[in-house]
Every structure is written in structure tokens, then in C-alpha cells.
Length: 452
Ligand code: HEC
Ligand code: HEC
Image 1 (cartoon, rainbow, N blue to C red):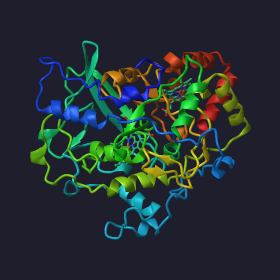
Image 2: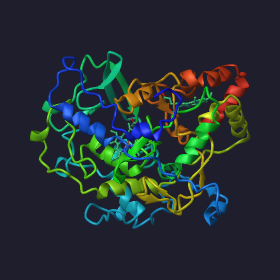
Image 3: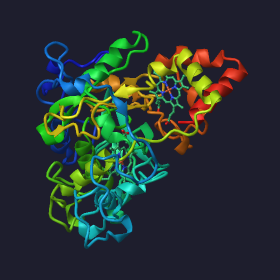
Image 4: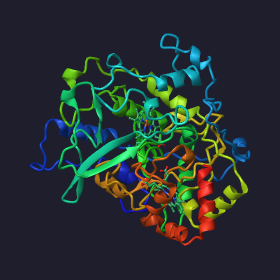
């Protein structure tokens, strides 16, 4: 896929591009078929759904209404998607009712899983909250994951068992270790999920319209990814550092397996340990969860408020104008409106809830991928179609920026100034314009970033 092009549905709908491991370059254990099965699992099938109201014809009532602001706050309160539910500290493992309320679903998102629940055999942490917690459950954190692979003859190969290298295991014998030869390596830090329901409710067409409005040199890449709960119906990716998912249910099933080692009907098979079978270490029959937890996680995130801004002083307002003038806002888009309530999304599996529809959010992202010179070398999928994504990263949403002190996908920029100075590639003009600012204007811009 050429940089800056949007993948046409016909290309992604085909199953072409599945890479067969080159004989001899690799110690193939039993992973060839599992790798292929994983790629098939992540292949979108069909054409992109229309999610925005038609431009022609009779305007619907909801389309005619002016959008309202999405609720914001770091307060553990529902945005209206689910009822708040019983007092949080009265909920325990025995009385929790999945899907009943925000507080019930938050309890499930916070729960620490054990080996008896299906944890592992390889995993990264025991619960979603371990990595999504700052400043409240659902936020970001400093926990970073490893991803590794290697280039052979110009082609990317994931590490045995997948590019995600788990950092914990239930037994020392199955600990995943990075192969010396796998020298394409990165950290990826945990992202924020507060307000994610609003992001899920953005119509495909809205993301494409943002993309179309960007000058060619800065234009982002939109990729189609499968909605796993909708028979792999394609939708534009918007979640994760590589826009690897479009639906919160798909992301949750993926995280349950890949962060915690818990299998579900969407992902019924355990990960290997660097290609080695972990069966002897897995006491719980698969699927380890019936899939209800996955919807509880998704519904928790759907019901969270968007991150709240700090005080907006005159300096902050002036700084936002500098941010726009130097070109930061072309990618870090200040305002996006979600699809109207009732719009079918996620391959028809979900309708936009009244609490999430026709709301304006301020994510400071276009939810598109760009090459800003920081690409971690690991494509969304190790297939020809996605090769171009190796050098691209989703525009980091800047909402909740003030809750993070390890910046960029790898968490290796300690300050905002250093994060800005790392921008190159498609962001070179913006960075150069930033560098040319007076000290006073730079300070205003940084005060603005401090308010996010
Ligand atoms: C070990 C840490 C860890 C655990 C545990 C974890 N996550 Fe994450 N999460 C991450 C990281 C790291 C990312 C970014 C990954 C990437 O894009 O490569 C992420 C990204 C996400 C995103 C995408 C948000 C966005 O737009 O960037 C969602 C949604 C999410 N996680 C949900 C969950 C759920 C649900 C659970 C529990 C089942 C969970 N996570 C458990 C570390 C974790
Ligand atoms: C061409 C698109 C583009 C432009 C223009 C751009 N950015 Fe970014 N920005 C990105 C991408 C992509 C990332 C994520 C890069 C990574 O993690 O490797 C990012 C990351 C950041 C981060 C780190 C956020 C975090 O959570 O870690 C900050 C801060 C930031 N940008 C500020 C700015 C400022 C200020 C400007 C203007 C001087 C700007 N950006 C211009 C695309 C852009």
C-alpha cells in the first residue's frame, strides 16, 4: 500500500497477501498454520458500510439537529450509555451482574484474573485496569509492551507466535524471550480508553472527509480492518497505535486473549509461547470466557466520559491558535462530530446510542495513520497490503495529555518539547514552523498542551 493512499475495499476483501514463511530462513515449529489462521482471522471480508446519512433525499430529524458537546470528566461517572448502577463499593465477585450498569462493567474491567479463570499461560497483566488506570479506570498508564520481528529480503516477519511478546507466564518454562535475530523491536505504551465510545461512533465517512481535507503532503492513511463480531465486515480502524481495530468489542476480545491469555468465542485458541504449544500448562478448557466479559469491557469503555480539559486561560486559548497556525491541528484535529443516534456501525452489529450520537468531541487526532519518522517497523499485519503501515503511527490523540509523562508510542519521549522535536516525515513542516516560533509563542503552545 502506497503511503497516503486509502486501501480500496476490493484489495482488502481479497485474501491475497498471505505470506508463507520462506523455507530455511526460520525454525518452523508448528506455527505456520497458526500464523496463517491468525492472518485469516484479521482479514476483512466485504465492502465498507455507509455509516453517514445520505447527502441527498429527505434529511432525518437527528441529522438536522445541531450536535451537542460530549460530556467530559475524570469522575468514574457514566456518560449515559449505561445506568450508573449500584454503589461501586457494594459490588463484589458474588453480586456483580455483567452488562447491568457502568459500575458492574467497571468492576469486571478492574477484576484481576487468576489461573483458575484462564489467565495465561503467557500474558502481560491480570486485568485491564493494570494498564488502563490513570487517573481513573480506563485511562492510560506507563505500562509498555514489546513487539518484535525481523526483515528478511525486504519482507517483515513477525516473531514466532506473533509480534507481541508477552512479558509474563504462569511457568518459567514457557516464558517468551526475544530472539536475538528479531532485531525489529519496539515498545508500545498503554493508551487512554476514556471517551472511546465516542470514537467508535465516528462514521467511516467522517474520517475519510478529514483525510480528504488534508493537504497531500500531510494526508493520513485510513485502513480497513475486520469487525470480528460481524463476520469480519470491514470498517475503518481507529483504535490502537496502528488503528488495528474499529470496534471496542473486537479490541476487547483481542486484549482479553493477548494481554491476559483468556480465550473467548471470538478467539478460542491460546497463544503459543514463541511458537511452542502451551497446552500442558493450560488447565482451563477453551473458550475460557463465554464472551460476556468482552461485551462488559466494551460497554464500560462506551459509557466513559471523554477526558476533561484543564482550565482554559487566555494563554491557553492563544496557544491553541499557535497550534493551528503552525499546522499541528491538521493531524491533531480539534473537533469531530459522531454519527447520529441510531446509525448502524460495526458491520451492523451496533447502533449508535442516544448518549453517543451527534456529539462533538475534542480528541486532537484524525484517527488516521501518518509517517512522522517514528514508525516502529511493525506493520498492522505482516502482509503485502499492510507493508506501508510499518512506518506509520496513528496520530496520538492529545486529549488527556496532561495525565501522561512518557510520550509517543514507545513512551521514550520524556517531555512535550522532545515529543515535538521527534516529529519528522509528514510532520516536518509543522515541526520546522514550531522551531521558528519566538520563545513567547512556543511557551503559549506548551501552555495549551498542558491544558489537554
Ligand atoms: C499489559 C497492559 C495491558 C492490559 C492488561 C490491557 N491493555 Fe489495552 N492497551 C495496552 C496497550 C499497550 C495498548 C496500545 C497497544 C497498541 O496499539 O499496540 C492498549 C490499547 C487498548 C485499546 C485501544 C485504545 C486506543 O484507542 O488507543 C483498548 C480499547 C484497550 N486497550 C482495551 C483493553 C481491555 C478491554 C483490556 C482488558 C481485557 C485491556 N485493554 C488490557 C495495554 C494493555
Ligand atoms: C503529520 C501529522 C502530524 C502533525 C502535523 C503533528 N503531529 Fe503530533 N503526532 C503525530 C503522530 C503520528 C504522533 C504519534 C507518533 C509516535 O507515537 O511515534 C504524534 C504525537 C504527538 C505527541 C505525543 C502525544 C502522546 O500522547 O504521546 C505530541 C505532544 C504531539 N504529537 C504534538 C504535536 C504538535 C505540538 C505539533 C505541531 C508542532 C504536531 N504534533 C504536529 C502526528 C502529527
